[in-house]
Image 1 (cartoon, rainbow over the protein chains, first blue to last red):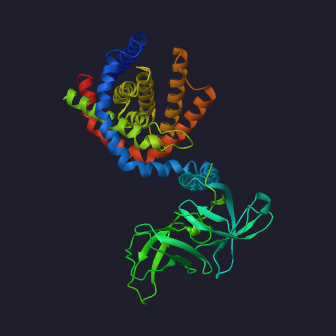
Image 2: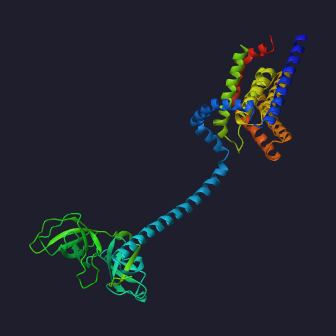
Image 3: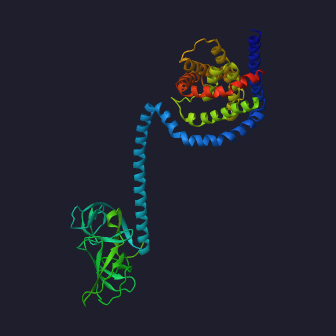
Length: 279
Length: 172
């Protein structure tokens, strides 16, 4: 009985010691404002615990996420819906930004081309393409009311795109150089040999050189020659030679040209309103 | 021998703290994290009595305060009292049921968290509004109660290893 009483007393004594120690620590902490010996010890302990925490987190994070997720099932559903809405909005914004960026690049190329050739031009937007599989034409949002006339050259950022073939009051139809009905007087940039560039209806065009002995190499640039009654100003880029087989006849030589213009993504074009060079 | 076991207690505390601040820190239940070291303290007190309970509580609480940068001494005091009180209650029980550890740990967690909140308020520490303290205390108690069936057997096994230390501390 005495031993038990003694034990109880020792227990209370130890409790009192711990309580007093805790209160002393609280007081020291208050007086040192977080820069006392205990805080330095804490930083040491943190150094020890840090790598252990990191390892445990890496290993058990999926488990923790699973249990954490159970308690948040209701809110997670709402979060998912909110995030899906935000995601859709962001995607739409991203697409708009990409579209604007592409338009911007297209317009910049047009400006470069206009300045390079010092042409008087008017911008137009491609508003439609022909639904027919047999013709390669596009429609633009400029017509006679805007001063558009038949046979006006049409430029895209990379070079000549075609010419106006029909003019409405507010819209016009542009025959692209890849159309089978298109024919453009052209010349090789390397040696000036001339010929006729004709559309094939496909992605490439054929360039029929008047001189069957003309030297042509793959990679040669082809430009407008300006010799066909002034429809196209001279020197406009048309494309590069991608295939130059030997001549088939003694009258001419035909090579295949890849146009510079990407006709699958025409957005903005420039109408050459005047053949006179000037501002 | 006392030092060796004291070291074991510190190592146990550091491991528990690392677990509490990593895996258990991410296992929130309705925004509340489990109080792992409090659970371990109370579990030791339940299995080994008030002496080891309050010793573990003081050690774990002090470690928590130091490492987490909490107001030093407050957690130590809270866990010490929790370990002592639970150990004393356990001593009075003649035939505890299988549910006793769950109920006791949940109740001790609730009481300890409320005491911590109230003591912090008295000290003028930045604290949560009383309503949120109460909510966290209740949820923390439930969470610790849920974890008890998984952790209590483990802690009881560890407590048995620390048992001789009790006699040494008392000078027997």
